[in-house]
Image (cartoon, rainbow, N blue to C red):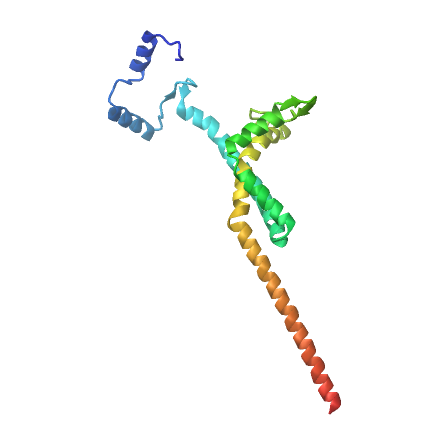
Length: 212
């Protein structure tokens, strides 16, 4: 209704939605409708909530899927590389950067991406700090245009998937890969030492045979 709603409009709205009934009565009324698939009507969209969910839920599931694929596609290669370069400068730089990005909430990262990548950022000292190359809002079905479909998904996937990628990388994945790589190094060193010892033993046996 907004801040400018009249008392008559407010009373009509309350009577239409039966908001004067006790809270328990309203809850069980809603629960009974939800059991039948009726979740009520959205006062903002002016449509049944079930229709809104049916329209937006597939888009949300797509976002979850793309964000997961992006997170795994980034975390696994980076985790393997940093495990291979464990303890070196590259590993320290990537780990520090990951901690810094992980400290940024997803919604703040989304605002920054929209501001600097979609809206053009700002101008300072005669220089533009930002670009306008990706759409900030909207959704294009893949059946209409594959390019526009993924173009509209880049910013949401980056905003949601970056934190997940770092969580995967900084969690069990990175530690497990590092342990496996270190175990492989230890095994390789032992194998080389064992081979050297065997070679030395063989040389000694040959020398003994020649002396005899």
